[in-house]
View 1: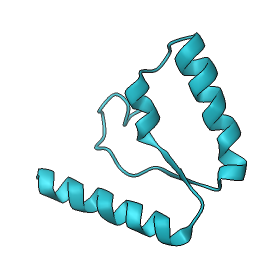
View 2 (view 1 turned 60 degrees about the vertical axis):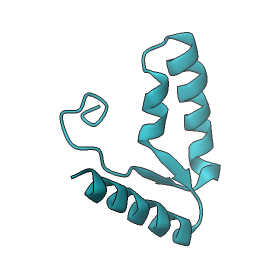
View 3 (view 1 turned 120 degrees about the vertical axis):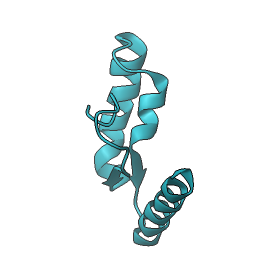
Length: 71
């Protein structure tokens, strides 16, 4: 919520394990976003579900590189 409202800087939020997190992701998209419109479509981009360790490292490194370029 603090990232969503820009009260704190955006940081990479990685949810590890699609088997575990895909149900929550579906609920957020189907119910919170589509049915109740309680979040904006951009809020879905605040987190990323990743399974592979190397992909997690690449995602965080890319995030850090992009953040540094914006400074």
